Image (cartoon, rainbow, N blue to C red; front, side, top):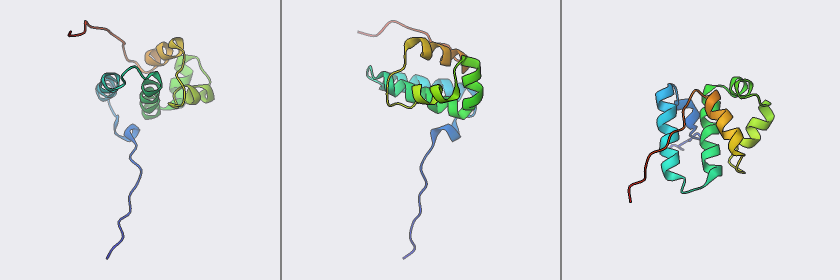
Length: 99
């Protein structure tokens, strides 16, 4: 019997267009249930797809601090989130919740 080999799935390899990145972030926002670290990890996935060095430069952060902030191990400050969203070329918007 032949042994099956698997590789780790990396969403960053599949986020190619700004529309795909925005749709991924939107889906993560819906699934997060208030987990800021989950959203930070999603932004990290998008930043890796775009190029972490360029995103860090555009956000005015060091690459190392950006990796730490978007690792998903902790919740970064809202200021950092806003800088990263801007550097990624995305917009944050709100709509009324359906009650």
